[in-house]
Amino acid sequence: MHYYKQNNKKTIKNRLVMLKKTNLISGIFLGIALSACSMQSTKQNPVDVSSTAMQIVIKKEVEPTSGEVISEFSLKFTDKDTQANNQLPVIKFETNFGSIYVVLYRDRAPITVDNFLSYTVEGRYDNTVFQRVIKNFLIQGGAYYTDDSEIPDFGPIPTESGNGLIHKKYTLGLAMWKRNAASRHFYFNMKDNFYLDPKEEHWGVAIFGKVIQGHETLDKIHLVKTDDYLPLNLVNTPIEQVIIHKVTLLSEADAASLLAQTKQKYQSKNE
View 1 (cartoon, one colour):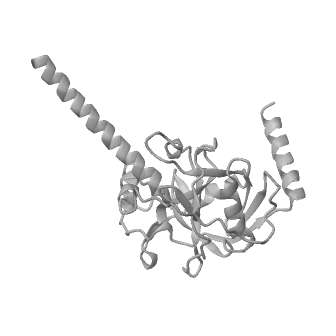
View 2: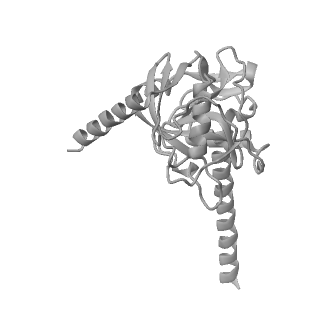
View 3: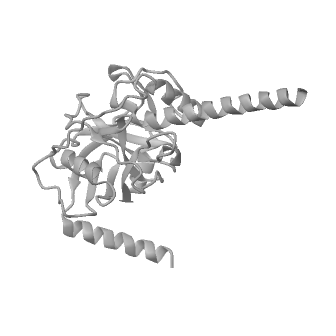
């Protein structure tokens, strides 16, 4: 009887631990929605936020929307040219910290890439800001212009997680809006965030691109000082604006040339 009670207590304790871990992970991955809806301002140290503290803040922010599902999606995008037959389009971010070049994987995330390029060719990401920066976690944009007005939205699209692309450092993801839906908010991973990949217990967030040049620009942005931004009820917002002056879809010829240079540089580095 004594042995049974001890083991029963251990079983209950283990289940509680697993439940807490599952809830925490769910809170983190849904937290990638981040500022997709307005967030409650939570005062915290703007620099050197510990991993545990960061996870708790994110979990609190997403509790009101966790579990909500989108059943109808808007897949009507721009009529402008998005290089529909190019499986590896390349985009250029021009920021006040420097330029960033990103290859997009249309073969893995076709809806997400078409959606993102629609915002790009329509100029909706021009003169916007990175509204959220967390050291050793991510850099997020796609919500607001420099005057705090919101970027016009095309509507929700399905989250294309489970496409084989994972949350490695310097990859580009599309933030979740609701449990299975995304929209215009994007983020750069500033470390390997594999717990955001799809798992049995959660949907996961879609990766659709990777930085091929301009890593040093992201490294600089990732170290800016941040604080709460009360006018928009945001947290972890750069004190001095980090501005995306323009996002451009490169011509197919320029994209192919840049990808070839990147491949050659990678091969030389590993010889």
